[in-house]
Image (cartoon, rainbow, N blue to C red; front, top):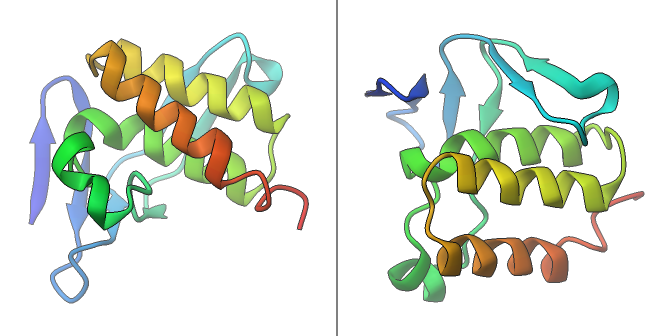
Length: 124
């Protein structure tokens, strides 16, 4: 099933595993906290969306929500490849949530979640 919103890049959710999505097109991110100020994520990149524990999904939302998807994809790639600094990855995630229209309380909860939950994932 292809998900499309004119404000956001297109992705496809796998029929066999609806908790995973793949980019249909490459996505360019520009932000002063990214190394060299930008990064392009190629088409075909897989993500599980925002890492939202099930008990909190009724408050925050579903992992592949289009408003979270672009920020989550970037955050996943920055963490997976350990690009730049961890704090910068989390701050860029927060800023893209803001840019994509996620409300202040929700994006603050999501940012706090990545700051608290993923500290042990960096540098393994």
